Image (cartoon, rainbow, N blue to C red; front, side, top):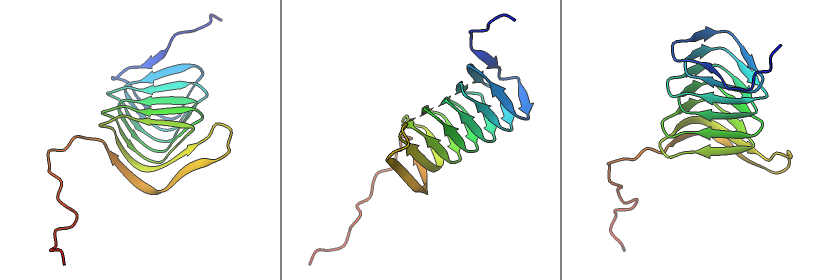
Length: 141
């Protein structure tokens, strides 16, 4: 059997219902409904729409994910991505413009001290044209 060293790609015209398992690197740019499980590196492309649980070593999200993500190492949410679900990772990077609705838990690789956010959070790093209003507008005594 020949050794495969490149990145596998599921293009934007691919739709899958069921579970996906892979070994090394996978780029998904299509629609997936089901579980994704791997010890490899996963990239969710700009056109991707993922609905289901994701467990992998490392993930970079450019598209949409609706479901929980658990990664052993690094999770990166890119500027135009949308994640609706809980997230657990050793390292988390959220770019300006990313939308994240859910709970996050950032754990140390050694399993020691943890930074934990138990409340749901909405992170919308989108630029806004609305002006901020003062928090207090009453007259001073």
